[in-house]
Image (cartoon, rainbow, N blue to C red; front, side):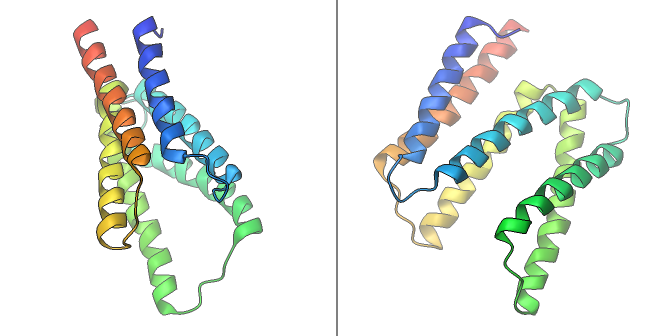
Length: 168
C-alpha cells in the first residue's frame, strides 16, 4: 500500500531523474528508456527477494537472477556486442562477472534479512562513487541541474526511509 506522502517522494525522485537526464539532443532516448525500465524491474526484484525471505537459499536466488539476466543481456548483446580485443578486455569482462556475482549474493542476503525500504536506498551510494569516479578519473563535468537531480533522488529515498521507519 503506497501512501500519499510516498507518492510525493516518488514525484520528487522522478523530477530528479528528469534533471539528471537533462534531455539534451545528444543523449540517447533509448538508453534512458532502458535505464528507467531497469530501475523499475530492479525494484520489483528487490521486493520479491524481501517477500521470499528465508524460504530459499541466497545462492539459489542469485542463480536464477543471473540466469535470467544472462538470457536478457545476451539478447541485448546481439545488437550492441563489441568483441573484446585483448587479454585486458577479457579480464575486465571476467572480473565484471565475478564481482557482479558476489555483489548480487550479498545484496540478496541483505534483502532477505532486512526490509526492502531500508536497504534499497543504500544502493544509491553507488551514485556517489560513480560521480566521484567520473569527476576525478574521467574528468567529466556535471551541470548544476545534474547534481541537483542526483540530490533530489537521494533526498527523496532518504525521506521515504525515515517516513516508513516512523510508520512501522
